[in-house]
Length: 146
Image (cartoon, rainbow, N blue to C red; front, side, top):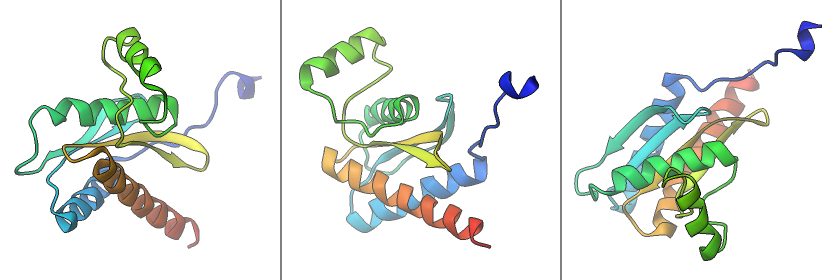
């Protein structure tokens, strides 16, 4: 009976959050694009954050909101129409955004968190987030194959 009352969950660790953050920072540095980078867990709790020298101070909020949106929806940010994006922001008091640069962190088909990157163009933000997700997938995949 307890099987129907609880479910197993995979959780993002602080160590993994820092690895994801560092992978994003390295990519941003290689691109020459200073960024604000946020990593949240599946409950949208901030686990790791960096504001690189030269990034925009207001991107602190947008990066965090991108990470939260991706973790909540399990989808990349930036994929809905502009009219729906405004409704999304309004309905969530600005907590969710449709700006490019947010990606979910998924392990074994479970959402474990999200990463949000902001301060470059949307395409740059997304490229950096993708590199960090790819890095995590490589580390997780390598660990599972041992």
